[in-house]
Image (cartoon, rainbow, N blue to C red; front, side):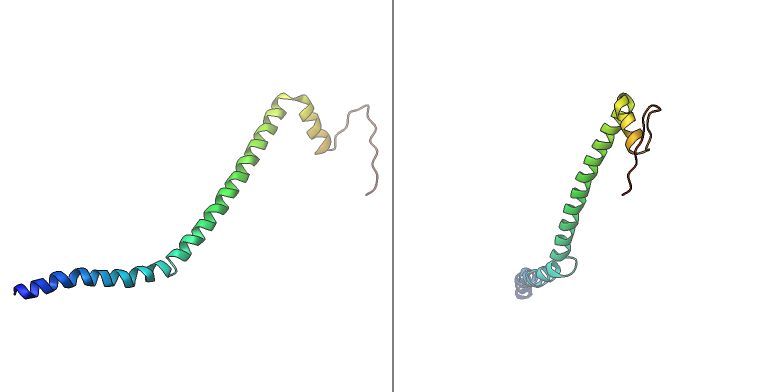
Length: 97
């Protein structure tokens, strides 16, 4: 019986080693392994770039809101550029495109 225990004690670690050598590479290179990891890395980079762009947009919009609340010239610029408004004493010339 002691001989069987020795064999088992030797076979168990060897079997686990063989199992790990075979299974780990298979798991790494299947669809959920390294290729998925690389795809997620690319997706993360894209999300971070989008986030940076959105942070810049929010900053620009925050500055514009602040200007519209405190600067009469900014309000006039918006009224002229985006709404096409003119002052009463101004003459507007339109040219065909």
